[in-house]
Image (cartoon, rainbow, N blue to C red; front, top):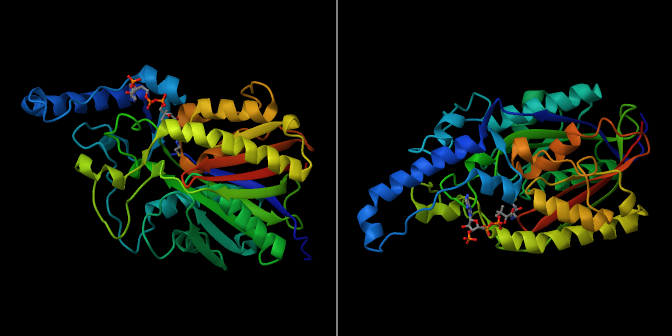
Length: 376
Ligand code: COA
């Protein structure tokens, strides 16, 4: 078949873990940990040698972030005040790894929705904030599990990974190097979150998403034309995780907290909102799209306040839930998967010709935009 070099989104897939932690459950376990900690170090606290920990609050979490619950792959140890981290049983090399397993589930849904035979898929890009191991690439394991004859590799641009993956896949289509590419984002963010840190313990959740990017020539009738993609990075230490193969360590002590997710939330808020809004408006202009005429924005799901501000700057008015849907309430921040979950769950009702924007942003700093138009 003759290809067009025109990339489209043929379908998306979503895997949602069965278990979920409500803010009430999370705060109850966090506050039990705080009480135990303060009792254990009562003398040191009284002597001014150790700082007393402060309790968390359901009201604060909801007001500051819009998050009411988050799905996780392994709830019990996370909300056990004596553990407060996920504990996944080790799997043998002959068993599928956890990250690949949930990635495969999301890919299968995308393939099914597109009516796509795996024999037609050329590549798998695993684009996520954290990889379960250094190598072999998660993407290659997912490729193998799905039975795809082609190639795969991992890419990490933190919360922007999925949109960077979509542009990479789109570029393969544009160049004629592939006609069907799966971009999969299995985000087991519960593993990089410091569940003992009051400032951020409520932020993240686990999920996996998949986006099937294809040449228009082979796409199903119902698809989304990709009008344009744009990526941007600017170095910042305000969202950082120092974990790496040169410093293998574990979060048993608070001294090791920088080997997990840390952020200067206020600075992130202040610096990322204008950067992203400006990028969206400039890219819309370049593509000849009226930003104020966008039918829907599927924004990165980190914080409802950030999304409200970005959407307002782009649309020129306060966005309602229909224009800028949120999945934060039930999923929390799922890193790069967030905007794809929003797109997956809130795009079926759009009409042919409607234009929308998938946009992600986060550590790096990084940001990616994918303008799409419903074809049929
Ligand atoms: N429970 C109760 N109170 C808490 C709390 C908790 N869990 N965590 C912090 N607080 C308190 C603080 O101690 C502070 O008290 P003070 O005013 O007496 O000093 C107050 O609440 C405000 O804290 P702050 O951290 O400044 O909150 P915030 O309003 O900036 O909200 C974030 C925090 C993280 C939700 C917000 O900054 C944010 O969303 N930033 C962007 C994050 C983001 O998108 N990151 C990208 C990750 S990919």
